[in-house]
Length: 86
Image (cartoon, rainbow, N blue to C red; front, side, top):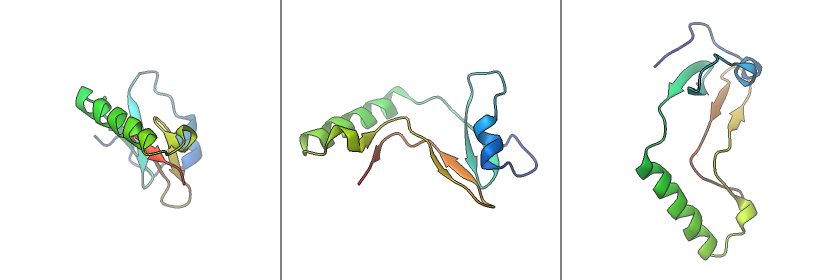
């Protein structure tokens, strides 16, 4: 669902609070509401987290619930389910 009409800056996004529990991502300066994660989605991310640990990837290189931000004229902020830092 599209929320804003004018492009939002990354700083505006980081300070945005509409008073609800709705989660948002910023895509090319556009505020987009994202649905709650499904149980299946959470289980898959958790399985992958455990699998990567078994492969020997250190836990501090595995991140869940982090935001990735790209600033500039096409500001974007995403929340991946699982991120592996190298």
